[in-house]
Image (tube, rainbow, N blue to C red; front, side, top):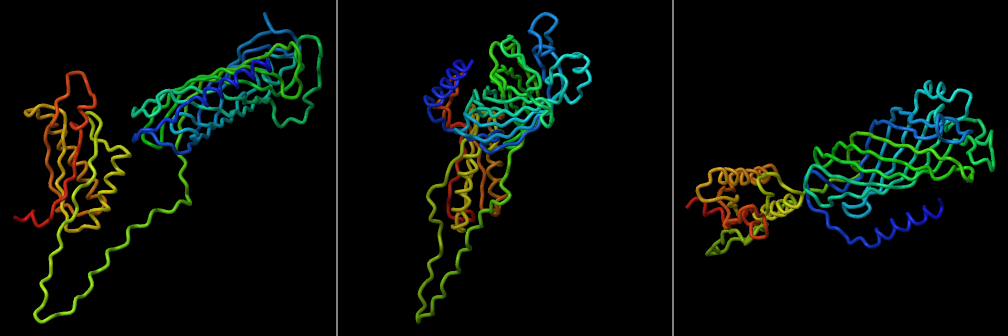
Amino acid sequence: MKTTLKHFLAFVLLIAACTNTVQGQSNQFRDTKAHLGAAVGLFTYHGPVDLLKPRGGSNFVREHDPAIVLLGSFPIHKDWFFFRGMVLLTNLSTKDGRKLVGTGANDFLTSHIFMFEPEIVMTLRPGSKSRVLPYVFTGFGATTADLFSADSKNAVDLPGQGVPGPERSVYHLPVGLGVDVAFNGCWSAFVEASYRWDLNYVWRNENNYEPHNTSLVMGGLRGCVRNPFKQAVPPPAPIPPPLAIPGYDPPLPRTPRVCTLVELNSVYFASNTIDLSTSSRENLDENIEALRLNPTCCVSIIAYASGMDADIAALQLARKRAETIFNYYVGAGLTADRFTLESDVGPEVCPKGKDGKGCVENHKVTTVPFDCSMLYR
């Protein structure tokens, strides 16, 4: 068993070492913050009824019990690999287990069960912009029955008999898969199923013992952990008033201020959506800072959508995209009279059934700066 465990750990380390860095894509349904979660599930014990007897025949059972699970996770490699810690409490009602074991010995059926499990979680679609994200996980944990009991863990032992003594703690190796469905970038629901192989008892490495295994099916919610001590970014410093110029005889003509901005960031939407990605919001925030520093600049918002010239649905989608950008600017404190909105179909036509590199311009919204004096001509 020790050799098998060493080979498994070496394989996991080899996979991690050969993995290229993955650049996470912006997605309003995913982030890379730490998360806490809670779940309920069905825990199943697969093993001997009486640990003092050989496993098999009438001395084997699959016992089901509800379980309460707490989880915490944080990213360790972009949005591909995460570390997760799991704490589980089950077998809260021991009535059925005591009746099943009778005069035998098996604390895993007659006592409360506590499980602690560090895990490595690998997402199967890193960078995906979908709400649904499948994942697999493994790790190394320990299961303890009647954690706070004062009884000796080695009250009875049958060395060399081919059966385990009534220990209450075992190491185990978990393997599982799950699906996470996001509500937004912070909250999501998940369901998963896993199986755990008993490796050996914690306090004694018995020879030729008959192990028991466990399985778990659970579902729950998770939410992101925000730093309460993180200070908000202060607003930009106000523009100082212009210096007073002393009068001359004759007075010098004052040069009116004009817009000096030449270009602002454009943003791109996913096909058939009006939702802003994280990178799009960052680009718009840079535009807002530039417009605050240049109050004489107005903006023409020009939005595109994929379609033909007479495609009303495409024009309506383009108009909604322009309004999304307009609302973002106005929500940041810029005045609405500095903006004009235009919509059009994309400058390129995508081949039927294809959404390749040539189609990206069909989902673009440009922000074109111009001097505000041109609005009144």
